[in-house]
Image (cartoon, rainbow, N blue to C red; front, side, top):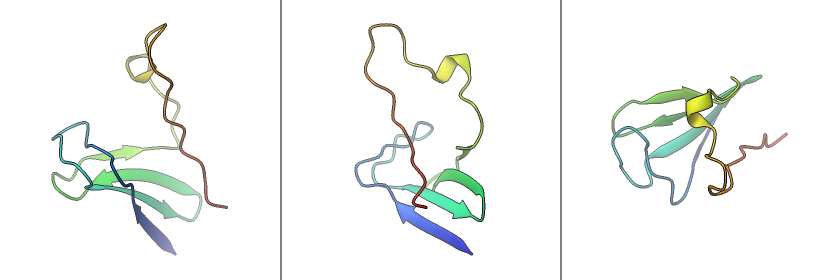
Length: 67
């Protein structure tokens, strides 16, 4: 069963749209997508070096499963 939840206050990293990010769960798969531009990002994958915060930067966002 697919579960979709909008993430309040989230901004799309591709198009910059506010409140258009949806967290999607389908069984054991987890991803986020933008309903404005169609951007999709796998949240199960390990973050790439470019996605990790710079040293001394802000704290990273942690997505937790609702299970």
